[in-house]
Image 1 (spheres, rainbow, N blue to C red):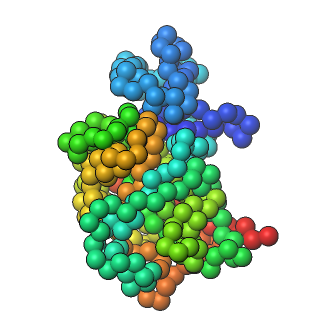
Image 2: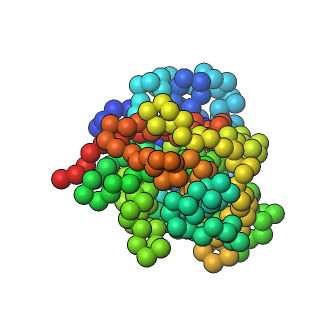
Length: 305
């Protein structure tokens, strides 16, 4: 299933939808028609676990692409928001998780040249999250080195604490796209959270694809363009630490809970690693894509006071 959070008009509340062809089906309204108490918010739906997913999937099979009157609208008539507009806690970011990105970061950003022996974990606060089409803020008083990073995001579906790699995928709800925006000149004594956690620095979406629809999360192409020019292209098979390893590693000391998000790292091709270096500026449009999930498009706008 492709799940989204949407608004039918600017004044309407955010709702949970499931996409079928060119239709956005309102999950809460659909549940009402069939007498099923399906939530109308993404986090609440994730909390229902397997029973909620199976209930929605069963209804979708019953309607066979013909949603009841009043439960669906053309997807072109709605506004997509971040799938989880405000996560419950910080996003787990993974640094230096592709070999070639380790190499370019060592040259351009003075990070260690050796491959990490364990995942490098940082975080981005919930206030950094924006959705499809929302502007990435460029404040020239804060940064002259605003950079891009396409990443596959993993959304946790059930509590994971001190789990084995073999059990990790059982805890995945689904997958999405994240652009790990980074102000390279705002790293502080080796700490990344301010550089990567400012407002609007976590574009997220456009949808969450449930885990059952992604046959192998380690076999997906991902790429990024700026103003239509390709800057990054790779495949998730090149991740140093795969999804199962990341979940198992984080859960050794931090309990992962339903709705938690792991941004799994970016391949080479970031602006800092290019020769000459390239930086995002107001007027640019960034598009980050992960195969089988979708494209996340965001403009860069001037937010300097």
